[in-house]
Image (tube, rainbow, N blue to C red; front, side):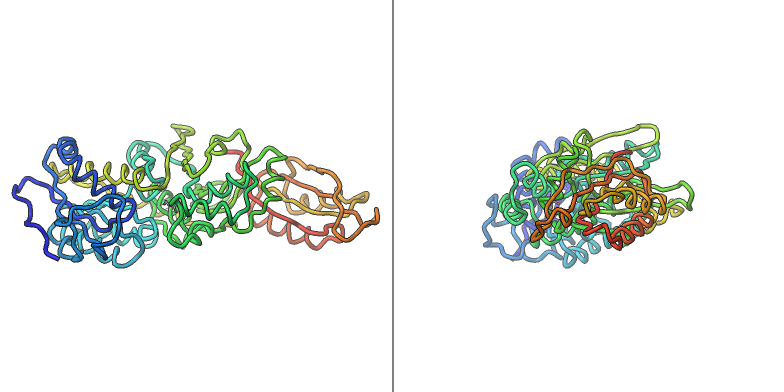
Length: 449
Ligand code: HSE
């Protein structure tokens, strides 16, 4: 399919859009219908040169004028001053972005999976050719979070970033918590609402959040982290019982992406982790409902900050894309030397999960007899794990056992800060105790900053 002739004015910034899914169609609509406004914001005319798609006939949220559609993505890239990549996934997105950067074209993308695995390489190409690469939409949809971290907080030291960055899992956990919905029903609903990835395994297994954790960590700590540096646990093991027990103790279960600097008693580094987490209902992140996202940032001087908004969906995500388009187009109009996106503070390596310290919630079924609590407390003390609270929510009858002597009791322990290693050894020993019938769940708790 032929492309329309290139821009008539040498002043005009030409834009090539790759992909026309939910977000792409909305971006195309804005670039066509709001062209004057966007041009005024940039200070130079901008023009959507073409939209590269696999199937020009596919139905779309907005009917893209036929003369803009092309199947030749490479030709479009080669004719554009600014390329917006919204194809997603690894290939051909990666090769097309690289092609654009190598010829010095600016690139705006929301491709979190690609950035989490090839972000450092793409940034290096951009640095080499002087091309601009922006990806605000890759984390938190509409929420302006990357630019505040990169620019507004660049004179401070961030110590921790903790976010609800996957709308699908937040929706599922929220539905389970507030309506008692079953996991599968809530997930199906999230898919219908258009929040989930094409393969929702990426959402529920935590992979989408892990990619976002790598991007957040990279910008917050000025070190190039990748997807492989993130410990990742999804929500598939979270049960209704966990959620109910958490609620009874004043907690809510959230899937958090955490990047935290550790400096005490060890070589400094950053632990990146994604896992279901208990949050006190009073924590600002606990109020994030439905498919909304929020990122909580702690910096030495700024203190605590929270950024909240819609983390998915065509229109919200297109807002972040268009913000990057305007910012980048302004820079194309008046070039200034680009500061490094990743300044090389490589003295902050990724640390293994064992180095993380957090609080833990342990839910056990134990024998209901004297000395049990003392025995459990001894095991925790032996591993230097201190108890913050212990709860015995009432005796339960073990299925199939009716005699008093065989009845069990539930015990729920919340620990003070402990290392992952101490906790793991503690749980192993608890599982081996005669008095512990089962350890139902072990969940991390975030209370302190
Ligand atoms: N599947 C993602 C989510 C889409 O549920 O948040 C936004 O990245």
